Amino acid sequence: MKWNVLTRADLDGIVCAVILKNTEDIDKIRFVEPKFVQDGEVEISSNDIITNLPYDKRCGMWFDHHIANVKPKDFKGAFKVAPSAARVVYDYYLPNFPALSKYDELMRETDKIDSAQLTYNEVLEPEGYLLLSMTIDGKFHEDEPYWQHLVNLLKDKSLPDIMNDPMVKDKVAKFKEQDFLFRQAVQDYSRVEKNVLITDLRNYGDLPNGNRYYVYAFQAATNLSMRITNDRERPGYVSIGVGYNIFNKTANINIGELMKKYGGGGHKAVGSTKVKAEDADRVVKEMLGYLTR
Image (cartoon, rainbow, N blue to C red; front, side, top):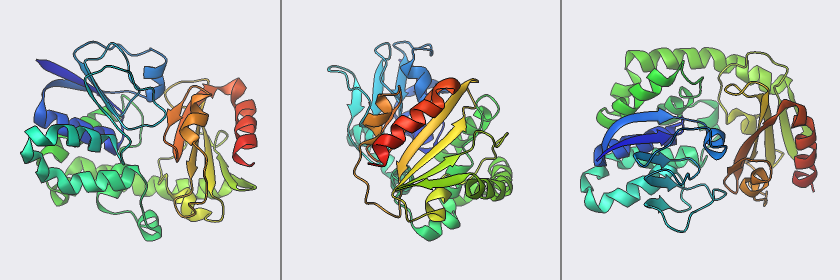
C-alpha cells in the first residue's frame, strides 16, 4: 500500500518522515500546521499517516507524543508521552526494522532538541543538528522544497555531508544573518510580568527567523515565557506560545491543557494556539491571570 505522510515542519516532523520512508511505501510528504488539522481544514484520507500532529479520524495511521492531543480509543499507529514524536515512530518500527539503529544519533539529537534539553552555551552558539533545526523555521510553500530536501538528506547522509550541502549552507548563512536581528527584536519587545517573560512581536513587521530558545538565555530569572506574533499562515490571526524556561525549571503548570481551552495544544511544558487578532489581547490577559498566580 502506498502511503502519504502528513507532518509538521520542524526537525521532529521531518525525522518522523525519515523513519517512515525506511519502513513504509511513501508516495509523498505534506507539511501542515497543527491548528489546520484541529479545525478540519486539511484534506485527509485513509492513505495518510499523520505524525507529530493532532489525530484525525479520516487517517490510516497516527503517531504522536503531545499530551494535550486527544487520543482515540482505537487507531493504528502509536501514541505515548516521549521526548519527540519521531521517538514514537522509531520505537514502533524498530523491532521489525533493526536497521533503523543507524539513526540512533539522529534520534538522540531529535529527542534533545524537541524536549529542549539544551545547555546555555548550546543556545547561544547552536551547532550541528540544533543549528540545522533552526534553518527549518520558515514560510509554507516558500520553504517546502527545502523541507523535502532535508528528508532525503537525513535519510541517506551523515551530518557533515548534510551541513556541506549547498542548500543547507545557504539556509545556515541566511539564518545567522536574521538571527542577529531576531535577538535584538526579542530584547526590544520583551517585558516581564511577575514570573513571565512576554515577548510581543506583533508590531515588529516582517519578523526575521531566529533562535527560538534565545529568549530563555536572555531572561533566566523568569520561569515562563510567552511569545506573541502575527500568524504567518493565517492573516488576521495571532500566534501565542507559552513555555517553561529551560534554564529555570520551577514552573508546574500544564501548558498544553491551558492551550486546549483556546483551541490549541502541546505538552505540559510548552504549547501554543492561534486566535483571531481582535481576541488576542483578551486571551493574553486571561492566560497571564493563570500563569502569574
